Image (cartoon, rainbow, N blue to C red; front, side, top):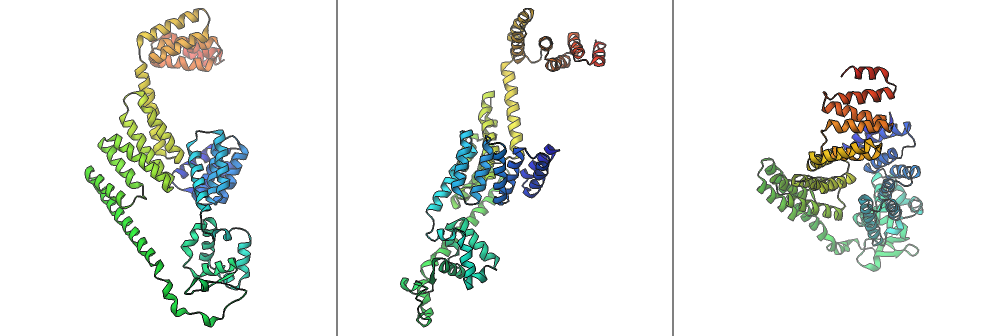
Length: 473
């Protein structure tokens, strides 16, 4: 029952339905409260909804149940980052790397947390005054800011600055923020024409008649350039989106060269959206230009890390890169970089399509290995060696040679029969029964396969089944 609920939760999570995923994971936890994976999964779902406090509690429970599981510390670090507690996040990621030093998700999370910590260290000098429990007490004590606390957007504004002090610059045009700064700094911030009038101690206020509101426009020209820059940036982004749409239309028409031109132009207009790179990589993939596809995917991953892009976008680029490797594969070893890339994509985002591609690549690699290893002559040599060890009653050695024979020729029913006999001698009856069934499957007319199977069923005290098998040959 717990596994069923977990599977439903995983499916809901993969489709982006995080609320439903939390519901199913909670049901699974109620049935299996000591399963650390369930708490880890629910922590990820909470984090996806930005419910970082709940995510943190589940992450703590994960490492409490299984302290040596590296993914638990990855969940813990992500929750701390969401809460803006970067030092705790860094400690969590480092702890996880002690258990799994090569874990890419932990390395990436650690780098992001350290970068965010450095960014906070260089934040506005006003940022620190928003930290600490006395903040809300001061705002409640002041008559003006007390009224602001009844306004949801004001409370959200303060919480945003608490989470990231750099965001204070966004709200400096809001008079309520200026009032808050005055309360927290114990100064009276006023609209004035000089720095001397801008900050004055509340203990010695100046008469109101000295304020010169008619001169306020003198301070306004300086920041007027910012909106123009923002407008230009938005215009470039909008133009880039148009180019992307044109590229998408050309891609659907299989007009690949035109699609590449549009995606390239979109990249020139806006280098903060890696979807233009991944889309161009998709075009190269369709054109059979696999090396170009891989290069664009690598650029997308690198740029995505710099921009802290959505993990789903990083995973998409890695999946596309893995697909290019599959297309280029000629021998079994060629599938190894594809498999590795798909695995990295799944650490970023567990997408069903990526998982399917991974399974297909692993199967293709295995099939090619069998084809490359196929050699009936060597198989016969190994079978004869196995027979010699069998006669000497050295059954483990015999099994070793029979197994090598099957690697060289997996369609020889005789070898399965011989190995089944070895397993029977060693009382490894389930393994012997499996080999006997495979022997019959490959050659239904080979009577020794039935005798091997019946003997094993007899030793397993399945007498009725043994009688039925004996009657079949």
